[in-house]
Image (cartoon, rainbow, N blue to C red):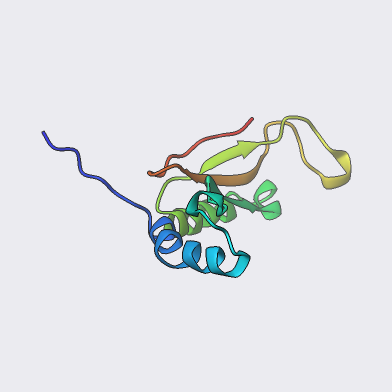
Length: 108
């Protein structure tokens, strides 16, 4: 069974266009000197989610459409009275693309 290879659009654009421009602009002698992308992290904080769960659902739908993958919903680790956040209250969404393929991951 042949495994299908997939390359993200951002990586393809970087390899075909951006890398060459960077090499010319900074006079790098080798393509290995050019900086490269290791991962792309999308993060969305939704403060209104603490009072209305529909806002959280809408934010998850938006980030899913942007990233092309289901985001991780992170919850507050501790209460912060000044921001009216309680422990285990949903506070942010995160989606990460790393390497050649995209994977969701939570960084705790």
